[in-house]
Image (cartoon, rainbow, N blue to C red; front, side):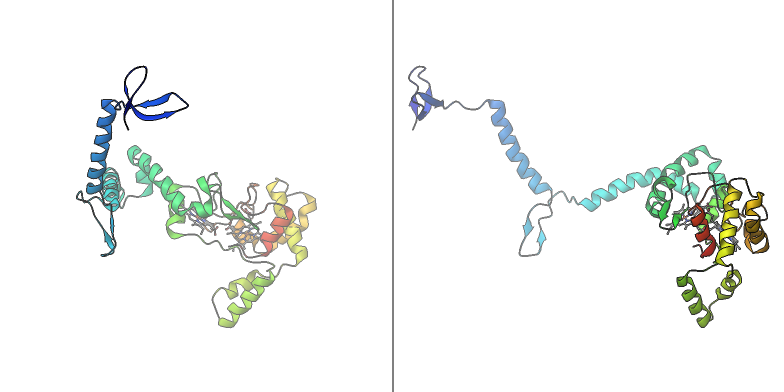
Length: 282
Ligand code: HEC
Ligand code: HEC
């Protein structure tokens, strides 16, 4: 019910409270009314243009007159990315790694795209940015962000590591019980490898202890100290030299670690070295 305000005479809604408070019936400002109408129109247009209402009977939905789908939008975005990447990717096909690195533009490109590829494919084992990952026996996958390489750090060595994969062949010298069971199975089945294992078996715990002390001394530059002479004897007279070399500096052709640099992929404590010298690595 519309009434007039006592004092101003302006029309009110007729609702009075607290004795003398009343609502005027003024219209909201014009700009506001226009905005309200425009948003109502916008809702209808938007609703018609984009997929909106599920249609319960046909198990589908109103697809919208604009034909928009999320997949189409994603493909258009991907098309834009591919257009930028395409020219680099086409050049890279069949190029040797060293040739790529000789080209500044391509180097810049592979550094960026390689970072993504590394995150997707390699980081689960080698860790974010190649920091390596540890399991209870030490490092599971080697650190890649230092300058110490099992298989060589030249671009072609690294390329070979990635494209062909690597499996080092440090054999067990004092196998764990699990390895003995595995070995027994291998022998029973006549699998290749069992024989190779046999060759490497056979250091006593005492010899393992001595050789591990020698290896630790090597990494401290004290390989010639008389205290580790017994271990040196074991090292020199067993198969260690065949892979790690007479000087213990390792052999990148077979991924045999450098034992003199005090950089350890596995546990570098005496107990750790005893363990790595006993069991089969990888
Ligand atoms: C399933 C785990 C795993 C994944 C995934 C993996 N690596 Fe490795 N990678 C290893 C292990 C373990 C070694 C050590 C092999 C050995 O010594 O027997 C290694 C060795 C390497 C080496 C040699 C390191 C050296 O010191 O010479 C390089 C280089 C390397 N990986 C790069 C990569 C790249 C690049 C990727 C991704 C494309 C990748 N790896 C994915 C586990 C992995
Ligand atoms: C058939 C070759 C071979 C023989 C023989 C061999 N090693 Fe190894 N050794 C390797 C390889 C390959 C690695 C690297 C394993 C890896 O990181 O994947 C290795 C790794 C090690 C490591 C771990 C180094 C680290 O960074 O943590 C120690 C310690 C070691 N060897 C000691 C010995 C001792 C002691 C002997 C002799 C009793 C010996 N190895 C005999 C191939 C050999």
